[in-house]
Amino acid sequence: MNNAVQYPLTIYFDGSCPLCTREVQLLARYDSENRLRLVDSSLANFSDVDGHSRQAMMTLIHARDATGRWLIGPPVFAAAYRASGFASMASLWGDARLQPMWRVVYPWIARNRRWLSGLGATGALTWALQRLHARAARRALAQTNACADNRCDAAPRR
View 1 (cartoon, helix red, strand yellow):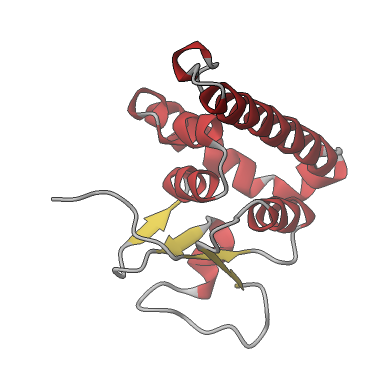
View 2: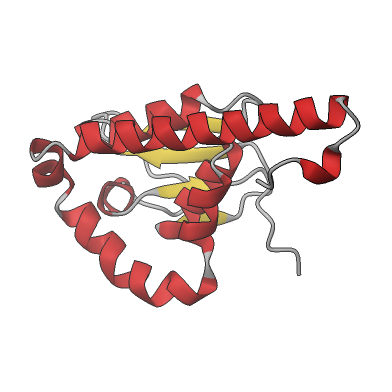
């Protein structure tokens, strides 16, 4: 069985939450291949989708890939970060060894997302993702330059 996410990935997020909105906006900004589709499940006219209720989507982030497979919670972040070029963040959210921790930590974050937004988590998240993306861009440029000079083996690894 193939567990690889098939893009595009439709992400159902809480658009009334500043932290949630900021994160998906940042992911979309760096989604250079247009692999993410964002749907605000907080809207009053939002309807259940394929057996998944609005209430469930407002409790934990949901996504559906191009084959119709549903992802809920941490796997959504792994797939979304991967689509946006944040390989290290995708690995962090997708690491099988960390899944027991994510099963506890992510629901806590989801329950407290408005409080975290008020504490400035939105700005901290923005800062961290921008730094990670800049680092990845510098490494990609170094790899490209090294290969242009026939020194691919000497280039920094991503």
